[in-house]
Length: 102
Image 1 (cartoon, one colour):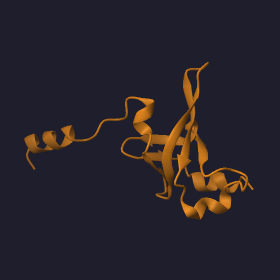
Image 2: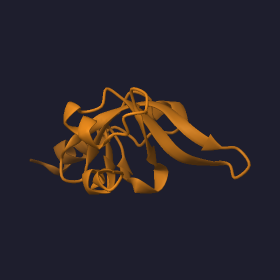
Image 3: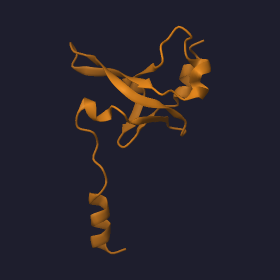
């Protein structure tokens, strides 16, 4: 591959999301590759001007056993659990954390 081809390929990489709404609809995976769900909404703290979490729907059915039975159809992931946001969202090893919710 020539330097020109490499440069063209690098320019085609999608940029990081610019706004909060850009992450709506993104798939969320743990760093170990387990599908968790899809971003439905973002939890914001307006006084601190910060995001505090992401609300997920279309939750992986394997995670039903770790969800609170009184919860609705989704879960909220604390924003500090997120490791990377690009075409998908990568979180810390959330499965271990969710298992402690018994």
